[in-house]
Image 1 (cartoon, rainbow, N blue to C red):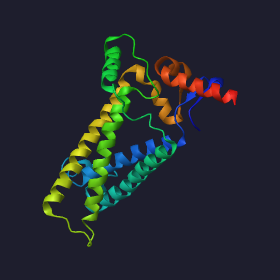
Image 2: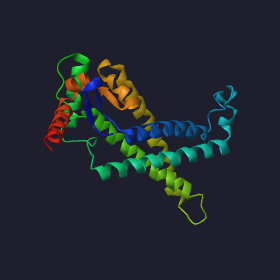
Image 3: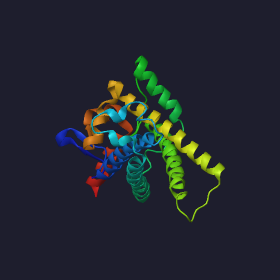
Length: 231
């Protein structure tokens, strides 16, 4: 189901099943990748994690490697599906725009110090900037991760210096991704952002919230509905 005003239930359809599929596949596979990746350093036995019930396997490199590979396949599947889906639909609302930094600062100022927010589209300016940051990290992690797998195949022979760089970039990008995820979750500390949480579970947000905070998007939806009525 696409974007649509649902006045009968006082909701707006913000996301369809495809977006929810990508979001949760990425979220779950990323958590597994982070856990299994840290397990290969190794550090879980050193800090006593393996002593916890059911986590004795977490220090076994062969086990965490297999888990890491399976999660990586789901991760790349979600990335590929996301790219193809939005290219086919020509849906680029989440991409950064000129002036997003200024608008993002204005939104943060209004949240922290009070005042009126600038009129927003479907995605807030900081959401578009965060998307670009996460997308860059996902690209770096994906490329370096594929190279790290390829080096184990007999048909590929990479130089030692390249592999050091690949490993360092992979680790750094993963650390920054953890920071990005924490920042993403921290945004919901502010009450004004909390109505968006429901959208990532049901795909819907409150109609009144949409009118108030995403008025540009709401006006576009109204125009779309008006055009359909005239057909």
